[in-house]
Image (cartoon, rainbow, N blue to C red; front, side):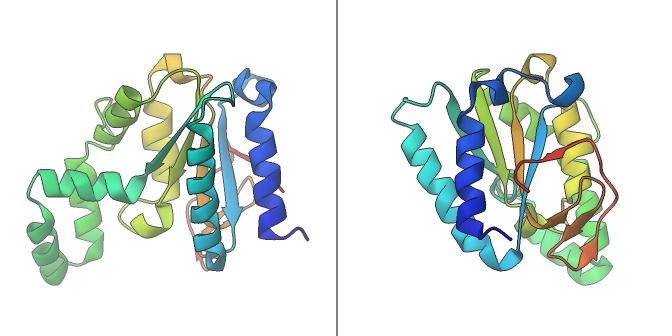
Length: 196
């Protein structure tokens, strides 16, 4: 089995291939990808993403790399709305499931004017590759199937060719999502593993 460094090298090579950005996915399907990794490699993955972002800023890759930490977006939204203290109180009184539901309503996660979708769409050029990180930090407030079904699928149509890569601390089999290699999330099969 390849080491995390070898898999990250393959990921870097793959996103630089012009055909990776010139398609809407296999058989004209969505251009959504998952880079899954062992949770204990989180810091290695974060470091490589930061390295790639800095390297890409030189403008020699032929595309722009956008990195969005979903946890940072979620927290920024809650802070902007002065909801942090309310979330703490709600969790204490009603539990984390109620907090997650309230946060998703606040983000309009099921609506076309979904706050995360709008943020990504406003800040991303069309000739780009998008990395979505922080899903492990968000769990259980925002889970991976919701990222795919309620965020990525609501992206404006002109982003159909933009490859979106979800960095997933766990296992993705192209059917099952197992966050932290412990908790089975809803099955999902429309994204492709970026590196095996």
